[in-house]
Length: 518
Image: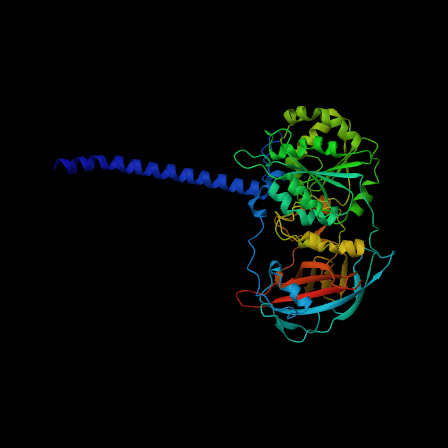
């Protein structure tokens, strides 16, 4: 009888201990979940939390932290399609068999041939209206695995008035700098090559993990050789101070960028590694409006007013921050001190504080630079008819094949993202999408940007201007650009737009190819 009595006396204590352990575990789990959630938002560029006070604002994802995001790693490649005998597949169909395009094994295929009418007086910002249809009436069914298909539909010709191509030029007066990892420099070559190839401009990359403890040193010369093969002049260097974080190097690299400059240099561009310029011609034209012989700091704010509330008034690095040589030379001697004294330890903020503390220069805003603080579906931006100088966040906060999209800029200059209305219901945003509106385009004010991204609202209107509501997906059918490139015959451009079929219903992808004649 002694054992049961002890058991009964001890039972309340056992229950109390068990409850306590349960509550402790629950609190730890909740805390871990909160930490995990915070880390996810910081690393992946999540929604920006409101600042707790002006001295120590909550920290939305910084450019460097976004750069470290695992979400930016390339997706594993799918297995190649079956090898076919030479000439078994027509060249235009063979190009569609590339697995990286993500097309279903069977597709519906149609095409349009475009006769570009080059004109210097084209109203680039107007929506050009045509009385013809862009959606071809006939489509062929193509099996991309076996390369069997119906007879391909004829390529109906349409004439589109577009601006003349940008003149060929060199830009040795521009030097750019980034702070990033070895892998990201390697993976970013196609995007950098789009706007740097053969330009005469220099790119300086501070590779923060070049000599990472416990790992073999990275081969920076091999990286430079890879870029040189694409006619891009890259100088890859190790951080001067190996104790600095990625964000701090985003500022400290200024010393390396200044060192790479020469007597031709007018502007130094301090960029994120996913800053993208559709054309160096338009960027150089914009910068030339300012006096590079003076102490100048050029850039743009975030489109999201909440980001400014968190970080303050400064040139956001994803849009591109540009310093005249005069200003850069003023700052270099103060780099060590500025790293210590900056009020906020992020690259853009350190740069701002250093400029304010040690010079009399103030920020000058450059229209057309975009920080691109949009997450999710950014079709509203790309379909608004803008002609952006810079794009950002295209491989982290959202996904867009910007280097393929902007090939139109090499072909017909400002025609990239130029809008054309076909009939009453179809809109082409050149290089981005073809969209068919079920209710017709007369229902919408195309001069207002559709707010398609996550958490839209008035906080974007100060910069973007008046917005319009997002359209229900059932009221619009969109074909998005997945590929573009020169025609095999030379002198022209091919663009591949895709509407994804419903996989659960086993619907084929719908492909429209636009073939621009040279």
